[in-house]
Image 1 (tube, protein in one colour):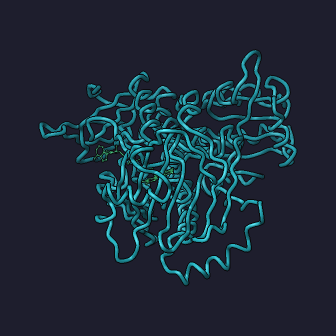
Image 2 (cartoon, helix red, strand yellow):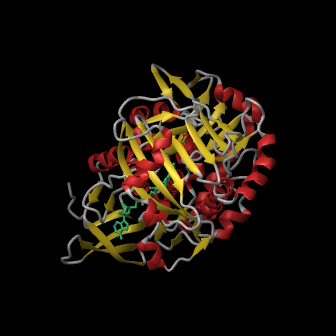
Image 3 (cartoon, helix red, strand yellow):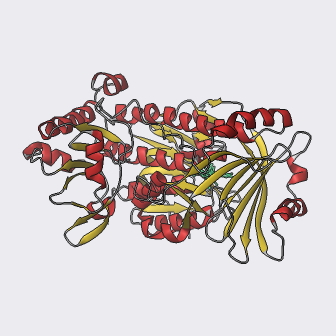
Length: 524
Ligand SMILES: Cc1cc2nc3c(=O)[nH]c(=O)nc-3n(C[C@H](O)[C@H](O)[C@H](O)COP(=O)(O)OP(=O)(O)OC[C@H]3O[C@@H](n4cnc5c(N)ncnc54)[C@H](O)[C@@H]3O)c2cc1C
């Protein structure tokens, strides 16, 4: 199970949770060498996250997990919030065909997903996974960084070096502490009892995903992935998690839902304090933070792991570029500029949702109901809060820049499938028709950074017409999509496509010499 320690790797990743594994796989897919160091001696067996969105699914697709996702997850359709009398306060409808080519909400069991990720890490060339070693120190020098590792149970410490170190070591991150990074804490925290069960027989829950905003016991009732259910019960004022977090108490909470030992197996019960906070800096030179090490969110938007996967997708292509262009430090600075405001905005949304349900006071709950219930259209749905765009970093000021592009099904020759699988992941220059713009040197440069031209309607057939519709809706003829699916920029006419790619080239090349302000400011 354990790897030998390579002399030096491109990146040392601390922590084999979903974010560390995803980052390793995204770097491995680019031919980079990675050592993942994990303090536990084997996989963490207990469920935590139960939801990921379509963007996260596309990132997992880039980690080569696409074929596994339908078996690992089930699409969510309705997510309803009701008061104590069953009156709807919010009703989110999600689509089985999300914008990134996957269902927009997917329910799953985190250990099952992690098992696939770990399996890929252990079988991908260039990646090694060292179990049972705790990172106890870290540092950096001119052209590299290092961590000091200690074997489980004690023994000789050892130093491991890489060009970069990334702390994906969870909420109590050692790497964050070693960097001396502060947390911006919104002060919104509550204790909840989390109970996961495996049902002996399939059962229909209507609605399938529910928040019971009952001040006498705020409760979450959602899918926990195929064959599983998740309940969460808020700890009320005057109670302690220690008294709630008992097997008998957990079964008693499940009784009103007709769930008991004769029809379900309890997978776990655990007390959990959720928080809303993020690190104020996400890197220092060659040492980075990602995932829960960088941010923690209340669970009501199901976004903690999703945000961590976004970190991995953002960081992977930048580290890859910096490994090939050793002075691209300003490019690496954009990791903080792009990710911190976006993650903070998502945490704010989750916190606002938390303010709806975490109300144990009857009067306050009545005031909330009076305000919210009339806004739910009968039989209709509440628009989901839009995913915040990137507003500063590697992007232009053209239409749609910073937002996520789409992924749809295409045909190239005999190959039919999602775009990333058919043409490959990376920078995509998606054009309506073939603009024949990228000739000679610029085309060679674009290919050298992993760019691919996707000429919709000529070499690439837009089977569902979704790309064509997107171009019409946005009044453009071309999109330059980043490897993390954000839009770098758009071109209104075919004549502007070359200039768009040149602009990217200038911006990336400037990142090798100039400071962050040049890359994030003047060139936009
Ligand atoms: C009850 C609950 C519900 C949730 N629901 C959702 C949801 O629906 N959707 C969602 O997206 N997210 C959800 N989350 C959040 C999600 O589980 C986390 O965001 C995710 O697990 C974070 O992944 P990570 O890889 O960053 O960190 P972790 O999963 O915490 O992994 C960190 C790893 O680093 C290792 N490590 C730590 N320190 C060291 C060290 N010094 N040396 C070596 N290794 C080290 C740890 O052992 C661990 O394996 C939920 C969380 C909880 C608790």
